Image 1: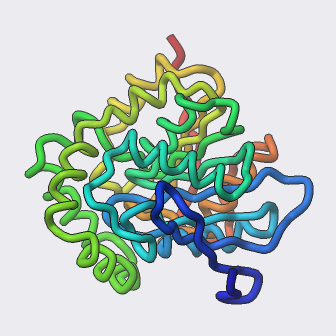
Image 2: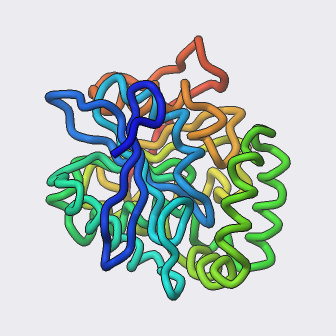
Amino acid sequence: MVESSAGWTEGTVEVDGHKVFYRESDPVDGALPIVHVHGFAISGAYLMPTARLLARRATNLVPDLPGYGKSDNWEYTLGIPALALALLKILDGLGLDKVVLVGNSMGCPISLEVAHAAPERVDRIVLVSPAGGVHNQGLGRAVRQLAIDGARENRRMAKVAVPDYLRFGPVNTFHLFSEMTRFPSLERLVKSPVPTLAVIGSKDPLMPPPVRVREVSRLASDHTTVALIEGAAHAINFSHPGELSHVIGSWLDGIDIVDDPDSPGLTRVLQLPRS
């Protein structure tokens, strides 16, 4: 392990003969670790603004999943179920018995898969801008949504994302993007076996319209909460870290989620109709 910045170290853990890179904040006693799960074709670097703020309350870990960022390349593209299994092996390698998962975009279906496969390992899940499902189909439509989102994101995001996208490559992109758009994230959220918080942005073109969110939410259990951050697009973890960390912290503490006046964006909890 090497120190990367104040309060953070970097290291690797082996998964099926491949090195997986991760970032870890200083230990915090008495709190379950928070593990951040990045999105499609990108490393965990863009999740760091939110992770740094949450490091005040718990140990935070930000891995680059196998084949991404600073982790070793694999001989083939890992799909969502395989990435979920790899994440479980990362937790094993780091000696983490139970964690809180915070996923963004494709990291949301991966987190949901982990919770369904091993609910005893996951205390809670936070799904930030969950991607996948009918609203992201077909492939051309999803590409257009990504193009729209790119124009709405913080300009500094490109400096993080573009090198990662280029490293991931077009072949991996095609195989995994097609699978991600078919993954029924909202429907899987309905059956989440652990308490779940979904955080969505009002300017996120990859999210279905509010009527669809409410339609699906009618089937959700009482342990599901949905919060909306006005003005945020898809990469909320990068663009609105103060507001997002405030929402996550409030939810973990079991207190009302209200707007953080010191952060960009305006948060409100959606009142979910129940069946």
